[in-house]
Structure formats: structure tokens, C-alpha cells
Amino acid sequence: MGAAAIVLLLIASAAGVQAYREVRYPSPPATAGSLYLTSGTAIRRLTLGYHALAADLYWVRAIQYYGSTKLRLAGQQGRPAPAGGADAQQGYPLLYPMLDLTTTLDPRFNIAYRFGAIFLAEPFPGGAGQPDLAIALLEKGLRHRPDKWEYMQDIGFVHYWWRHDYTAAAEWFKRGSAVPGAPWWLKSLAATTLSEGGDRRSSRLMWESIRESAEIEWLKSDAERRLTQLRALDQIDEIQAYLKQATERGFAVADWNAVVRAGVLPGIPLDPAQVPYELDAEGRVQLSPRSPLFPLPIEPKRLKPMS
Amino acid sequence: MSAIRVIAVNVFRESVRDKVLYNLVFFAILLMGASYLLGQLTAGQDVKIIKDLGLVATSVFGLFIAVFIGIGLVSKEVERRSIYSLLSKPIERYQLVVGKYLGLTLTLAVNLSIMAVALYGVLAYMAWMAGPAAAAAWDAPVLDPALLKAIALTFVELAIVTAIALFFSTFSTPMLSAALTFGLFIAGRFSADLRNFNQVLESPVATTLATGLYWILPNLSPFDVRAQVVHGQPVATGYLVLTTVYGVIYISALIAAATAVFARRDFK
Image (tube, rainbow over all chains, first blue to last red; front, side, top):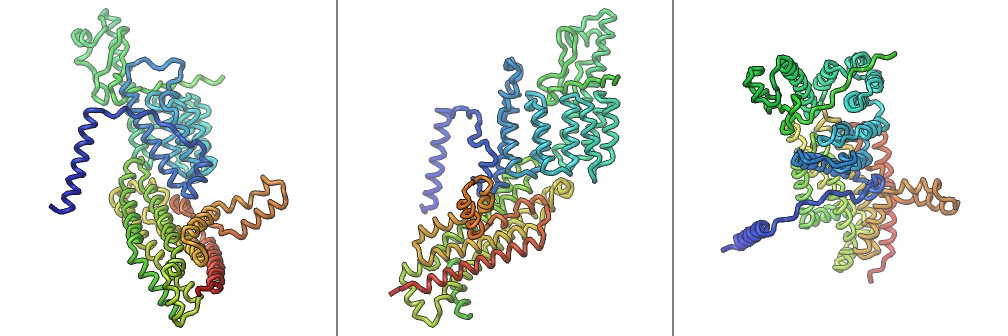
């Protein structure tokens, strides 16, 4: 037997022993992540000028952290939420520091600002639920690249969708539209936001604009997902209207079987992701937590008429 | 002139025969290949990361080559006592120093060229895989010729590091030479801070000393244009020329110093 075969045999034996040990003594679950270094300036120095690569590593880490935390939280759905409104801090406490480090190490890291803002603004548990930090991150990007109308669009979007501040949203869309090279529709988006902010139709218009203009596949598919969520909201309204009519006619709408038996609906309605909607005891139609579209966004309210 | 050429070619051949050198090149190429896998985890930033990683790899591996081979250029000849047979030949001491230096820079040039080709190869593969639609989202073209500007300035920076290593190699032990060269490299990367010391120091003597050091130490940070080229920002030709001229002058000073020290050494 040659030396190479012996080496291979020994490596295979080691792998076998390792596999057996892992079955007998399973590895403890991974502990919560931590950031040993929190100062971007300090890391910039420690990396001896190779800070762009360090930014890449922190970006990969931020994505892994966001993805794994989101999956972990999705697995815990149904359990009571942590008290004290500290969900985001308990769920994604390292997200903003990681994104801040990434963008300090590479201030022109376009995607870290844009994706990072989405991860931060998205309501808990889908994201950190910290729209203020999302805006802070994008404003940091604008300090380095004042010509990025995309960041202004994203800030306007965070104001619109997550803070429901349509005046601020319209202001940012307007600022973005004034940047040379900005798309024509940003100006009309500003006007629509100011006049019809919070309306589902204007939300749809906004997401369609983002879907059409997004150069990055992930942003496109995210916009597509948002549009599907809006479609689910339309469907819920429609089903709710049928149930209301049925209730008015004296039918009990406590569960789907009763609704189907009464002939109010031909079958249990499915959301656009083909997951059945849920019906609570009070007859309210809701998206299932098992649906990939869950949670639906809190629908922006119609802009109050300005006095 | 022919003596310098012969020495340079011999240094290059010796470097090529050196297994460490092969390993470094192999590892650099492997790293660039691995960067493709890393790119899969980065939400569409694979091209940026491959560029960053490729450019950093050329710099870091080049740095190790420059330091660890540079420090042995002269001291190894002294340790092996082959310096006696060399000096007994009809060559001047300055020819030996310059030849050794040029041989190692030739090695670096060949290494960097191979690394650049490998980097462009990986990027071409990425461009082919991603398709034209994804290209719209990138800050700069995938096969951006501007990457060569970053590689060219890296080469000049490494040529300075080689000259530093050679200088220390003429009068110091390899270990000490390596420590001193790395020390100067780090100081060179941060030398711009010395210029701003007057903002934090009150003593005029300390400020003058810091400013003096700023002008004397090699200023290596201007050779780093990696982030600019990766983000598609322009790097002016004038900037490239002036930075290169600075590098060439600094190298000349170091080679002159190395030659002067080596000329005074007594090998009896």
C-alpha cells in the first residue's frame, strides 16, 4: 500500500471517529454572536490599509447574521414576544453595528447602505424594526455620496412605509428627483405621496417603480414580494367583505369549515403563496404565520387632509 | 551593465527555484478561486469582493515575497560565504546590490502579472456566469482595465518594500531585517498621520520631529488606490505618474544607501 493510500485511510478514519463522536456527544448550539471590535476607525488601522476587504468580511458577516437570526426567529414564531418592546434589540442587536462598521471601512459600499436599510427598517421579526437607524445609515451614505438619488429614494421609502411620515417621504423623493440622472418618476412619486400618502394604490405605484428601476436582482424580488403582500391585503379585504355580508345574513363565520359549508366561499381561501388564510374567533381574516408573506406590513393610513 | 543583468537573472532563477515562491503564487491563485465561493454569500456583491480579495492578495503575497526574499538577498550570500567568490569576480559591489534588487523586482513583476491574469480570469468567469443584466448593478465594469492601475501602484509599493528589505539586508541579520522592514512598511502605511500630529501635539519640537519623519519615511498610503478602482472612481494619470516618480526616487535613495553600506563592509 502506498503512502498516499495510508494518508487517505487515516484521514477517512479520523473523519469516521469525528462523525461518531458528534453523534454520541452532539456539539452545543452556536452561542450568540458578538463583535469584539466596535470601532470602525480602530479596525481601519488594524487592517493596515486593507480596509475594503475587511468591509467585505463584515458585510458577509452581517448577511449571515441577518439571515440566521431571521431563520431562528421564524422557528420561534408563536412563542410570546419578549416584553418591554425590546424585540429588535433582542433579535438583531448586532445588525446596525455590523453595517456601521462595514460602511465605515468602505464608505462607498453601495449595497451595504441599501440592503442594510431594508434589513433594519423591516418590522420585527422579519427585520430589526428600527427605521430610524435605517435612515441614519442611508444618511451616512449620502454624506459620502451626495449624488446618490437612490439613497434619497430609500430614505423617502422608509419614511413612507415604516414611519408613515408622508410629508418627510415626499420631501426626500423631491430631493432625489433634483439630483442629475434621477429617474423622471421620482418627481411624480413625490407629488403622489404628498397627495395620496398611505393609500394602497400609491404604495403599489411605489413598489412597481422600485421593481422597474432596481438594478439589483434582490431589490427587484423584494419589490415583487411587497407587491404580492399588497395583493394579499386586497384579497383579505375582499374575503372580509364576503364574511361581513354573510354575518349580516345571519351566518356564523367562526371557522372556515362553517363558512364553506354555508356556501359563503367555495373553499378555504389561499393567499398568493398558496398558504390558507386563517380566520380568528372574531371572524377576522389573517395571513398565516406559515406563509412566506408573513408578516404583512402595517398598512399606511391615508394622509390626513392638511388644514 | 551586463554584470547587473546576469546577477538579476540569477536572482530571478533562484527565486523561481525557491519552493516558497511557488507556494505563494499557487496560494494566491487558490485564494482567488475560493473568492468565487465566498461571493455566493454576499448578496450580489461577489464581483466587488473578488476584486477586493484579488487586489489584496496581490499586495499581501507580494509583500511576503518582497520581505522574506529581500532580507536574504545579501545576508544569505554572507551567511553561505558565497559572497567571497562573488566579490572575487570582476564585478563592482554596487552592481551586486543593483542586480540583486532588479532580480527580485523582476520576480515580483512576474508574480504580480500571474496574479493579475488569474484575477481577470476569475472575473471573466464571473461576468460570463452573471450575464449582462447583473452588470448594470456594478459600480465598475467587471473586466475593468483600471484594476491594472491598482496593480501597477502595488508593484511600485512592493518595489519600495524590496528596496527597504535589501537595505537592511546589507548590514543586519535576516530576522532583524524582516522586523525592521515590516515596521517601516506599517509606518509607511500610516505616515500621513505624522503630518497631522501638530493638531494633537503642543510641543513645537515634537511637531517638527513628526513632520520631519513624515517627509523622511516612505509614504505608502498613496499607492493604495484599490478601493477607488473597485468602485469605478477615476484615478488620474497625473496621480499615477507622480506617485510612481516618488516611488522611483525613494527606491533610488534606498539603493544608493544600501550600496554605500555594502561598499564599506569588510568581508575579510
